[in-house]
Length: 205
Image (cartoon, rainbow, N blue to C red; front, side):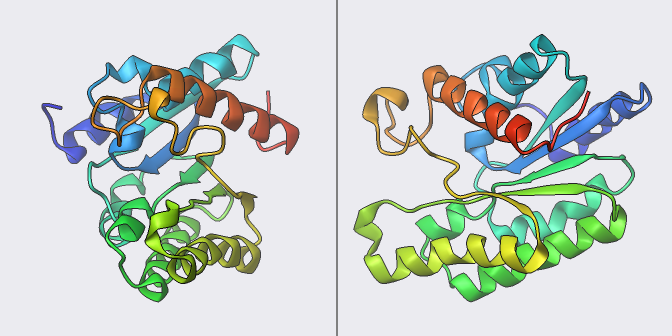
């Protein structure tokens, strides 16, 4: 995409000077808008929906392609000097696709939550649950999904059980690689997220 994560974040820090409320979307290439314009990614579309409905938020797309839970933990300190109001934790998809140990995944995400709250104990954190394709096996898939449920319960966080609700394993919503989403996918996800945030009073005007 032309610049490093550190360079992207330096640019985004200017937003904070305007005292806008910040939503930080942490994930991987799916958040990035892979092979699409950044304006077509779900964070950009979500910001548009929020503004159309008179919510003044800036949704920062803090993606790193191929990110795992360990990678996110290693870089979470990059965001310590910006007053983020809401964090989206949608990390773990690459852990699951690589069949990494779910106990380690949980440990990494818990440490990330702890680091966020140490930076800002007033921050709202939303855990977006993930589900693996059925070919990953029932036992591993259940263990993987359970990580998100346990993290949300143990930390008393807002929880959306299935981030890919309405879009997972639907070829017409993917790019030609069969993995990454097209713009129609992003539109559905952005609307689902907005409705969840509003119904649960996570956002405010």
